[in-house]
Image 1: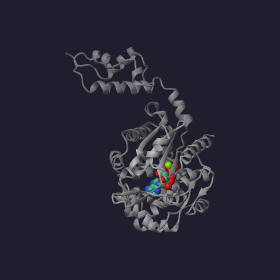
Image 2: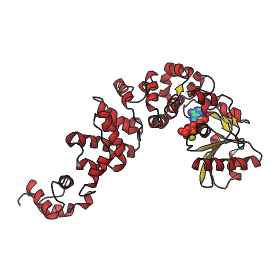
Image 3: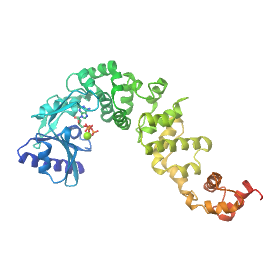
Image 4: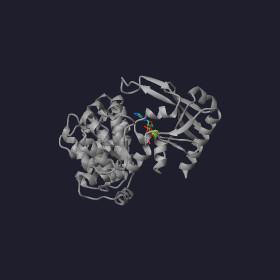
Length: 402
Ligand code: ATP
Ligand code: MG
């Protein structure tokens, strides 16, 4: 199993640090997921050694956040984030702690962490260091802050969204203190940089219990504090009906655009949440596919334009917005029946088309006509044969006489 192999390598890294006379532990999400017997994505290590010492101990070290005590170590083709034991003071920009202090003990390091289930350390020996009863909370399936909830959420209000995304990923509940604090102070979220919010929202919607998390977020007035929703409260409730795990955040925004009357445009959502151009394109493709679907159901033209990696997303959208069930098999069958898979395969191109209209100057008409031809060929209304295409286009658009 990959997981065991990664843990073994992490222990070898720890062993090397310990041999040099320092303490080192696996910390954070890796310990939590190990105890839950879930797949571990990345292994973070906390150590009493300073970054400079780690740089001496390993040959491949990337100083990714050296001011905060973090370096990335490559060891046997695996990456480990190694951070010196530290605590934090003040979050005046709500992004980075004002000052980072290195501390001596793992317990102090654990006390800066957000939730009890994320504040455990695993020693090389297998011993679990758990000063805040994270293991008990794992059993109770509960998200509880390390220390006083009000203080912890006010230091870094992103923790509000982190709490909800762990609810979603782990199918846990919020403890009463978190619940009450978030309900009262949900407006603190506004202080957080949108990029950080987007990262947590993606994880929230991708989690297995996203519905539970969305339910909490609505009850606690969290969505109502987020961009776009803030000005359009009617966008909030339909989120509850989206009962499936998503691939992209834009999938949710697309759903809302199609579901809610007068919803903001895709470009507004993408801008507000700083989505990448790639993700925006996914949104555009889905909206266009939906438009096609409305007009002519599962046509060849639709499948010609829909990239196969969006099949699942599109199927989910249809199932959320209609009572129809479409299967991947259906989509694949239609795609296999397509006469061409790209415009390049058309038996005509721009140059040949221009020659059919010698009295015309170049212009947008070329692209327009090519698209018309492409549509007819894809839909099998017209054979992909130059002679037939020529006849058809000249009959649709007779050339002007000179
Ligand atoms: P994932 O599996 O998604 O990576 P994770 O628990 O490892 O989950 P990260 O965001 O990678 O989450 O953070 C690593 C650890 O750093 C957390 O487990 C937690 O101990 C600590 N941490 C991260 N963000 C915060 C925060 N905003 N406030 C306090 N502690 C944090
Ligand atoms: Mg992590």
